[in-house]
Amino acid sequence: MASLPPIDLPRGATGAGAFDALAEGGENNVLFGFLLRLGDDSLILGQRLSEWTGHAPSVEVDLSLANIALDLVGQATHFLNHAGEVEGKGRDGDALAFRRDVLDFRNCWLVEQPNGDFAQTMARQLLFSGWQKLLFQALLGSRDATVAAVAEKAVKEVTYHEELAAEWVIRLGDGTEESRRRMQDGLEWMWRFVPELFDMDPLAAFVAEHGLGADLAALRPAWDRRVRSVIEQATLRVPADQRPILGGRRGHHSEHLGHLLCTMQFLPRTYPDATW
Amino acid sequence: MYTTELQKTKAVAGTEDPDKLAAFEARVAADEFIEPKDWMPEAYRRTLTRQISQHAHSEIVGMLPEGNWITRAPSLRRKAILLAKVQDEAGHGLYLYSAAETLGTSREEMIEALHSGKAKYSTIFNYPTLTWADIGAIGWLVDGAAIMNQVPLQRTSYGPYARAMVRVCKEESFHQRQGYEIMMHLAAGTPEQKRMAQDALNRWWWPSLMMFGPPDADSPNTAQSMRWRIKRETNDELRQKFVDITVPQAEALGLSVPDPVLAWNEEKGGHDFGEIDWEEFYAVVRGEGPVAKERMKARRDAWEEGAWVREAAAAYAEKHARKAEAA
Image (cartoon, rainbow over all chains, first blue to last red; front, side, top):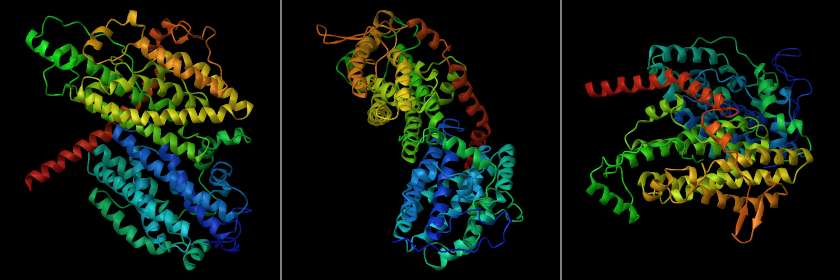
């Protein structure tokens, strides 16, 4: 479907100067912003997972992590190309992936977190893929035909990602003393980034109201049931909630994202006139 | 990826039952496949175990030089292709280890042999990937050389190895095309991109020729391997084919092959080319390649740092097998 007219959103629900307010000069085109959130989540996690390639605990794990990364890069390509069309300024997915700086990225904090050990990687994957699966299921009914089509393909992919992560969380939690400790630590480490996934800021509320996006807060109960059941099967504890860390959706990120972008964007930045 | 014959099998001639040996050789000569449960001479088993496990190790170590560029691939398309390619290599490693296991050596034993330095892998992976053009050059030259080696292996006498090669060859031909396509793009690009492309060809050309292994005169195992149809063409024959196919491809790119002696020889219907620095080759086989230590360290680190994961998976499986039994 055609893009929506640009819609100005209030400058951050929490007011000027708050960490989770919109980054200075931030883009207000709602559909564009929504597509960046989807595309950047997949891109940044795909980039993170691809760091494992050749270094995983076994060849089988290497294969599955590369496979997940590949799915995510594919999703990112679709969402970011579409974002570029919607924006209408001649940028394509590559321009968006390789020529934006931190303040213009719209991914959540969870996906930009370093891999840590394999338990942390699997904790991140369970929390994120569990959310992405519910999100894509909801987006099957999006009024944006491209979003619905990508979601239809991607929901199968992320269902597998979530199952794989769940299996590992259970195996590690209920494995040896060491793996149990590491798996609990991994969940504790990643848990503080969960609330951001379900945060209904004005943009999220707008796209949900207009049938483009999903009501994220409404996904939380199903997510809780699933994740709690996995953690229980893993004989682990559900970590305690803390004050939400927000800001990623509006361009305010952890320190890790800048370093990730340095690596990822190095060639297009160094040779601005080249095509590859 | 492919591996050259880097270690020698000690002769065990004269210890086999002559009737069984004659029957085995007759089957091989008739181009029958030998299967895991069939009788085979001990030297055949050892040669194959060594060759297939080296091949598997090469796939796994070979993930490192290319993996080095996945996070820096310059476009979303290139990133996806490279991820898929390196993932294919992990897959090749996996079914090659499985093929080798049918000969009676476990994957753990093979990996231990790699990490202790006892087992070898292709010398080519002991060179560093410096620029994006190296990803193009590896696909074009290294996978090109691998295909040259592996196509005849689809008819190698050991069934599981031959069948693995059928699938591997299909994927390798995609790898080679993507490498050449990267090179085409760079060679037609900015002066900086052309420079990268030429520099990559300069550095990868000779190591690629070395991938075919020592000259036939210095490859004492070749005769036996040819007789048992483990090998179907000699090192020098394959190397010549590779040069003849690759030189026109370099010309099409507008790049120059770093060999002043290289010239078409009408009489032999092939290229003459310069002397390979065999001293460098044997040094790299001994583990003295420019990044050999880094490659081995990366593999050992991945294995050791992942030990707790493998132990946990085993402990979980055992626990649940016991529960299932008790139920």
